[in-house]
Every structure is written in C-alpha cells, then in structure tokens.
Image 1 (cartoon, rainbow, N blue to C red):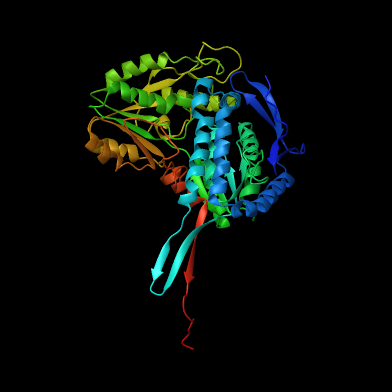
Image 2 (cartoon, one colour; image 1 turned 90 degrees about the horizontal axis):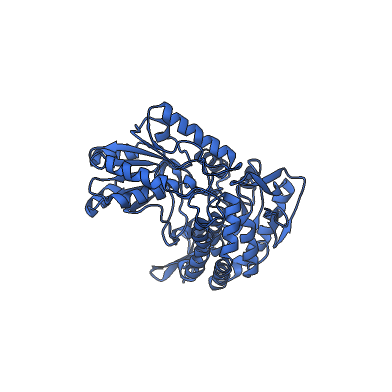
Length: 487
C-alpha cells in the first residue's frame, strides 16, 4: 500500500523536492505502515513558495471576480468527479472510514470552492456614500500573500475552506498541511492548476513545528489562518501580532451539549454520538460534555450504551466500517491516558475504555468510550481529549446547566436538545460559543459561518463572512469641486 506523491511540495504549478529537509513519514493509521516519505520545507523552499505566490498574486488579483469564480467552480467540478479517489486518499491519510470520507471530506471542499466561486461577483462589492456635491466609495481589496496552516483531522476540507475565500478575494496562498496528514493538499493544488488557476497562486509546502514560524514571521506574508490547538494558536497569534498581521484562529473546544427532559431521547443520543464519535472523536467542535437532565439519565445511558456498542470498528477501506483508528500512535496514547484519568477520578465507565479486540495488527484503534457521573472538576470534563470519549454529566435546572456549560476557557460550539423551541433559543442566546445547534449537532454547511469565541479562536470560516477576513476595506473620497485651504 503506497501513496507516494511525485515530490513533497507543489510550488509555481509543479512538484518540487528538496531532500535536505527533515524526513516526514506518512503512516496509515489502520496498520501503522509507512505509505509515503516526504521532506519538510527548508528555508530555501519556503522562500521559493512565497516568492512564487507574491509574483502570481498581482496577476490573479487583476482578474475579475467572475473570472476567478469560474476557476473555483471548475475546481469544485473536478473534485466531485474524482471524489472516490480523493476520499480513498483521505482515508489513507487519516484512517477515517471510507463511508465517512466519501460524503464529508472532498465533498465539503468542493462545496467551498463552488460557494465562493458563485458569490464573489456580488459579495465583493463596495458602497457609495453621498456627501452633498462630493461622494465617497468603498471597495474590498485583497491582502496579498496569505498563509494557511492545516490540521490533521480534515486535511482536504481545511485546505479548501481556507483556499476558497482567500483565492476568491484575489489573494495567493501558501498552505502547510499537518505533517501527520501531508498528502491530500497536494492533490488540491493539482486540481486548482487543472481548473485554470495561475501558477503560484496556491502553493503547498510540507513542514513540521520548525516550518510554521518561517511562514508566520516572513515579511511578505499579510495574514495567517490556522486550524489547530489552543497552545499552537497562542504561539502563532503572538508571532503574527508582533508584525501586525491579520489572523484567523480556528482552535479547540470542550463544547457542551444540553439535553433537557422534554427532548426526543433518540435524537439527542444521535446528536451526542455525532458530537463524540464521528471521525473517531477527532473534531474540534465536538460536544464532549453532554449534560443530561436527571429525569432522562437512565433511559439516555441505557440506549446510548446499546448504540455505542453496536458501532462497527474495523478496516477503514471497508465501506461497512463505521469507525476507524486514531490518526497516530501518539494520539491514541494521549486518549488512553485520559481514559485512565477518568477511571482514576471516579467517573463511571459505561462502555469502552480501551483498545478493541475486534481489530488486529498495529493500528491505532480506541473503543468508543462513555463515562457517566462525571463532575465538572474532573480532568476529562475540563481538557480537550480529541478522541472518542464522551462525558455525561447530570443537571437539574436551566440556569444551573447554562452556568456550568459556560464554565470553561473554550467557546467553540454548543448544542441544545429540547421540544420547547422558546427555551432552545433562550438557552443558546446565553451560551458562550461561536457556533451552536438546536436539535442537531456538528452540521457545518459552507453557507453558515463557523468559528469560536474565548480561547477557541476568532474570525470565521465559510459563508460570506469569511471574505471579510481575507480582504480589507478601502475608502475613497471624491472631491467634485476645487480644493480650498484656509491658508
């Protein structure tokens, strides 16, 4: 099983290699097999990518919005035509089941290209400001060369979510995928060139923790968009702020799901499972603190246990498989460590809690795990685990659960399940989160802004709102008469 690309980097419309860079091994999480070897970008590669982007950006920005939109929509069309191959690559890259990647990964990226390709002709318009005989107008201008830094849980989707609005606004982008999942973004770069994007407008370079600072601190970079952990976000935002660069931070979370006593129990369980077990729990917006009203607790836990234990864990390339492995050995060990802390601190283990015996080999599997009787001060209730570990907490009344839900440094997402629609709106209005759901969870259509508050980041991805984060407003005053001065 191999997925070796032509070279490690894609710069100025072609694959580029520099074997002086640190070796990056791409490992298939289901078996532990090395499927590709790449090299981290050297300083020379970083300079080459940024220089290419800087040169190409001027030409790209001169294209009309309609022309730029045509390229993005063509890229979406190609991605959909190749969805199977892209999904299979995403499964090799991440270990996520093919039944998931084929509907949630390249397709979401294609949606992003199509959406921004379709709206830019009208969404980038400015305004006219009458000032008597004079007037002023505004226009949105691209920032220049922007950097995208991706995470390993949705490599292709994240590359597209960042590239689409950036390119729509007339910017060029240098994108660095996670070193854990280096493969998918290279294919996105190929497709964009095939769709008609000028060479150099979208470059991909591989890298590790030493590469990011080279990009963020470079004087020719105008903006950094990061998807990653809170600690990484703090470092990147600090480095960018030192040079007054624009930033978008999509970081981690410890999001609450609140299940009131009048909720549809099976629907709430579905939402909680989607918010904890999809992508083997490796989703930043996951609702890992599930607050269940005491009146529903026993029914909720019994049905949740049965449904969780029915999840089919196995080979991600088998379309029947519903849950694959963690993305890496290190991530599996981290998750198992949190599970042991949950046990040690007195949470009740309802199901899971270890490595499944239904899979063989050297894969990085963890059982979907549910803890009940979790208190707010337990480590598993406070820290982001980023694995298939659900914490179920009890509550009695609305005011209490809102206060407890908000008692965290994070503010990415939240969900509410209730039959009382007035209560639903009342509660979400009081929850400290940037993205919220009522009677569903983790649906992120490209038409809807996505992002967090507090330590979960700032800025928004997707929707027309994203265009504001990849452009800046220019204001022009037009004097229609003679210019006079009092001296």
